[in-house]
Image (tube, rainbow, N blue to C red):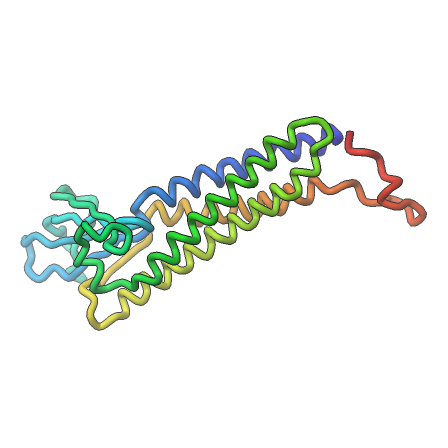
Length: 224
Protein backbone atom coordinates (compact mmCIF):
# COMPACT_ATOMS: atom_id res chain seq x y z
CA UNK A 1 0.00 0.00 0.00
CA UNK A 2 1.33 3.40 -0.97
CA UNK A 3 2.09 6.01 1.68
CA UNK A 4 -0.67 8.28 0.40
CA UNK A 5 -3.25 5.53 0.59
CA UNK A 6 -1.97 4.43 4.01
CA UNK A 7 -2.40 7.98 5.32
CA UNK A 8 -5.98 8.10 4.01
CA UNK A 9 -6.71 4.77 5.68
CA UNK A 10 -5.34 6.00 9.03
CA UNK A 11 -7.40 9.17 8.91
CA UNK A 12 -10.50 7.17 8.04
CA UNK A 13 -9.85 4.78 10.93
CA UNK A 14 -9.62 7.77 13.28
CA UNK A 15 -13.08 8.89 12.15
CA UNK A 16 -14.37 5.34 12.58
CA UNK A 17 -12.86 5.20 16.07
CA UNK A 18 -14.70 8.40 16.98
CA UNK A 19 -17.90 6.80 15.67
CA UNK A 20 -17.33 3.70 17.80
CA UNK A 21 -16.85 5.82 20.93
CA UNK A 22 -20.01 7.83 20.23
CA UNK A 23 -21.99 4.66 19.55
CA UNK A 24 -20.84 3.14 22.84
CA UNK A 25 -21.72 6.33 24.73
CA UNK A 26 -25.18 6.40 23.13
CA UNK A 27 -25.91 2.76 23.96
CA UNK A 28 -24.90 2.88 27.62
CA UNK A 29 -26.41 6.28 28.53
CA UNK A 30 -30.04 7.16 29.16
CA UNK A 31 -30.51 10.64 27.67
CA UNK A 32 -32.05 9.72 24.33
CA UNK A 33 -35.26 11.65 24.97
CA UNK A 34 -36.71 13.87 27.68
CA UNK A 35 -40.44 13.67 28.45
CA UNK A 36 -42.49 16.27 30.29
CA UNK A 37 -46.05 15.84 31.62
CA UNK A 38 -48.45 18.70 32.25
CA UNK A 39 -47.84 20.70 35.41
CA UNK A 40 -51.30 20.78 36.95
CA UNK A 41 -50.55 23.53 39.45
CA UNK A 42 -48.00 26.31 39.30
CA UNK A 43 -45.25 26.02 41.95
CA UNK A 44 -46.29 22.39 42.61
CA UNK A 45 -43.84 19.54 42.00
CA UNK A 46 -44.19 17.31 38.95
CA UNK A 47 -42.33 14.33 37.54
CA UNK A 48 -40.35 14.60 34.28
CA UNK A 49 -38.36 11.75 32.77
CA UNK A 50 -35.50 10.94 30.45
CA UNK A 51 -34.74 7.50 29.06
CA UNK A 52 -32.34 5.48 26.95
CA UNK A 53 -32.32 1.99 25.51
CA UNK A 54 -32.23 0.18 28.84
CA UNK A 55 -33.72 2.31 31.60
CA UNK A 56 -35.73 5.39 32.49
CA UNK A 57 -34.93 8.05 35.05
CA UNK A 58 -37.65 10.15 36.63
CA UNK A 59 -37.07 13.42 38.41
CA UNK A 60 -39.45 15.27 40.71
CA UNK A 61 -38.97 18.99 40.20
CA UNK A 62 -40.77 22.26 40.67
CA UNK A 63 -41.32 23.57 37.13
CA UNK A 64 -40.18 26.96 35.99
CA UNK A 65 -42.25 29.48 34.10
CA UNK A 66 -43.60 27.76 30.97
CA UNK A 67 -46.31 28.99 28.62
CA UNK A 68 -47.44 25.45 27.78
CA UNK A 69 -47.48 24.47 31.49
CA UNK A 70 -45.15 21.54 30.88
CA UNK A 71 -42.99 20.06 33.63
CA UNK A 72 -39.45 21.24 33.17
CA UNK A 73 -36.77 21.92 32.34
CA UNK A 74 -35.36 18.64 33.61
CA UNK A 75 -32.07 20.33 34.50
CA UNK A 76 -33.75 21.85 37.56
CA UNK A 77 -32.70 20.30 40.89
CA UNK A 78 -34.88 17.53 42.24
CA UNK A 79 -35.10 13.97 43.50
CA UNK A 80 -33.97 11.50 40.83
CA UNK A 81 -34.89 7.83 40.55
CA UNK A 82 -33.66 5.47 37.81
CA UNK A 83 -34.89 1.96 37.02
CA UNK A 84 -34.42 -0.51 34.20
CA UNK A 85 -37.37 -1.22 31.95
CA UNK A 86 -39.57 -3.96 33.30
CA UNK A 87 -39.02 -6.18 30.26
CA UNK A 88 -35.26 -6.08 30.91
CA UNK A 89 -35.50 -6.45 34.69
CA UNK A 90 -38.90 -7.77 35.90
CA UNK A 91 -37.99 -7.07 39.51
CA UNK A 92 -37.92 -3.29 39.05
CA UNK A 93 -40.80 -0.91 38.64
CA UNK A 94 -41.28 1.55 35.81
CA UNK A 95 -45.04 2.03 35.69
CA UNK A 96 -44.79 5.65 34.57
CA UNK A 97 -43.18 4.47 31.36
CA UNK A 98 -44.92 1.12 30.82
CA UNK A 99 -48.35 2.68 30.31
CA UNK A 100 -47.20 4.92 27.48
CA UNK A 101 -44.61 2.99 25.50
CA UNK A 102 -44.46 -0.14 23.41
CA UNK A 103 -42.43 -3.04 24.71
CA UNK A 104 -41.60 -4.21 21.19
CA UNK A 105 -40.12 -0.85 20.21
CA UNK A 106 -37.85 -0.71 23.23
CA UNK A 107 -36.58 -4.27 22.85
CA UNK A 108 -36.02 -3.83 19.12
CA UNK A 109 -34.04 -0.60 19.52
CA UNK A 110 -31.83 -2.13 22.22
CA UNK A 111 -31.25 -5.38 20.30
CA UNK A 112 -30.32 -3.57 17.08
CA UNK A 113 -27.91 -1.33 19.00
CA UNK A 114 -26.23 -4.43 20.43
CA UNK A 115 -25.87 -5.82 16.89
CA UNK A 116 -24.20 -2.54 15.95
CA UNK A 117 -21.63 -2.94 18.72
CA UNK A 118 -21.04 -6.52 17.58
CA UNK A 119 -20.31 -5.31 14.06
CA UNK A 120 -17.86 -2.71 15.38
CA UNK A 121 -16.03 -5.39 17.37
CA UNK A 122 -15.78 -7.63 14.30
CA UNK A 123 -14.55 -4.70 12.20
CA UNK A 124 -11.95 -3.73 14.79
CA UNK A 125 -10.62 -7.30 14.92
CA UNK A 126 -10.20 -7.25 11.14
CA UNK A 127 -8.38 -3.91 11.32
CA UNK A 128 -5.99 -5.18 14.00
CA UNK A 129 -5.25 -8.31 11.98
CA UNK A 130 -4.65 -6.21 8.86
CA UNK A 131 -1.59 -4.62 10.48
CA UNK A 132 0.31 -7.81 9.70
CA UNK A 133 2.27 -8.16 6.48
CA UNK A 134 0.25 -8.71 3.30
CA UNK A 135 -3.08 -8.54 5.15
CA UNK A 136 -4.43 -5.28 3.78
CA UNK A 137 -7.31 -7.25 2.25
CA UNK A 138 -8.81 -7.52 5.75
CA UNK A 139 -9.62 -3.82 5.59
CA UNK A 140 -12.40 -4.62 3.10
CA UNK A 141 -14.47 -6.84 5.42
CA UNK A 142 -13.71 -4.37 8.23
CA UNK A 143 -15.19 -1.56 6.14
CA UNK A 144 -18.36 -3.59 5.57
CA UNK A 145 -18.69 -4.35 9.29
CA UNK A 146 -18.40 -0.64 10.11
CA UNK A 147 -20.95 0.25 7.44
CA UNK A 148 -23.39 -2.34 8.84
CA UNK A 149 -22.78 -0.97 12.35
CA UNK A 150 -23.71 2.51 11.17
CA UNK A 151 -26.88 1.22 9.53
CA UNK A 152 -27.87 -0.60 12.73
CA UNK A 153 -27.40 2.57 14.75
CA UNK A 154 -29.58 4.42 12.25
CA UNK A 155 -32.34 1.80 12.56
CA UNK A 156 -32.13 1.97 16.36
CA UNK A 157 -32.45 5.76 16.21
CA UNK A 158 -35.45 5.54 13.92
CA UNK A 159 -37.17 2.91 16.10
CA UNK A 160 -36.66 5.10 19.16
CA UNK A 161 -37.99 8.13 17.31
CA UNK A 162 -41.13 6.24 16.28
CA UNK A 163 -41.58 5.00 19.84
CA UNK A 164 -41.45 8.54 21.23
CA UNK A 165 -43.83 9.78 18.54
CA UNK A 166 -46.35 7.04 19.37
CA UNK A 167 -46.08 7.86 23.07
CA UNK A 168 -46.86 11.51 22.49
CA UNK A 169 -49.72 10.72 20.10
CA UNK A 170 -51.28 8.14 22.41
CA UNK A 171 -54.51 9.08 24.17
CA UNK A 172 -53.34 7.32 27.33
CA UNK A 173 -50.08 9.21 27.64
CA UNK A 174 -49.29 11.69 30.40
CA UNK A 175 -46.61 13.42 28.31
CA UNK A 176 -47.34 16.66 26.48
CA UNK A 177 -43.82 17.72 25.50
CA UNK A 178 -40.61 15.99 24.50
CA UNK A 179 -37.22 16.63 22.95
CA UNK A 180 -34.25 14.48 22.01
CA UNK A 181 -31.18 14.81 24.19
CA UNK A 182 -27.42 14.35 23.88
CA UNK A 183 -27.39 10.54 23.81
CA UNK A 184 -29.64 10.69 20.74
CA UNK A 185 -27.24 13.21 19.17
CA UNK A 186 -24.32 10.86 19.88
CA UNK A 187 -26.17 8.03 18.11
CA UNK A 188 -26.86 10.21 15.06
CA UNK A 189 -23.22 11.31 14.89
CA UNK A 190 -22.07 7.70 15.30
CA UNK A 191 -24.24 6.67 12.36
CA UNK A 192 -22.67 9.27 10.11
CA UNK A 193 -19.08 8.50 11.13
CA UNK A 194 -19.44 4.72 10.96
CA UNK A 195 -21.44 4.60 7.73
CA UNK A 196 -19.38 7.14 5.80
CA UNK A 197 -16.14 5.94 7.38
CA UNK A 198 -16.89 2.37 6.37
CA UNK A 199 -17.58 3.37 2.78
CA UNK A 200 -14.42 5.49 2.64
CA UNK A 201 -12.34 2.65 4.10
CA UNK A 202 -13.70 0.30 1.47
CA UNK A 203 -12.83 2.76 -1.27
CA UNK A 204 -9.28 3.33 -0.01
CA UNK A 205 -8.59 -0.38 0.54
CA UNK A 206 -9.52 -1.46 -2.98
CA UNK A 207 -6.65 -2.20 -5.38
CA UNK A 208 -5.72 0.41 -7.94
CA UNK A 209 -7.96 0.36 -10.97
CA UNK A 210 -6.38 -0.03 -14.44
CA UNK A 211 -5.27 3.30 -15.90
CA UNK A 212 -4.98 2.14 -19.51
CA UNK A 213 -7.45 0.23 -21.69
CA UNK A 214 -4.95 -2.61 -22.18
CA UNK A 215 -4.12 -2.93 -18.48
CA UNK A 216 -5.98 -5.41 -16.28
CA UNK A 217 -6.41 -5.47 -12.53
CA UNK A 218 -3.84 -8.26 -12.38
CA UNK A 219 -1.29 -5.91 -13.99
CA UNK A 220 -1.78 -3.18 -11.39
CA UNK A 221 0.99 -2.43 -8.95
CA UNK A 222 0.93 -4.69 -5.88
CA UNK A 223 -0.19 -3.21 -2.58
CA UNK A 224 3.08 -4.07 -0.84
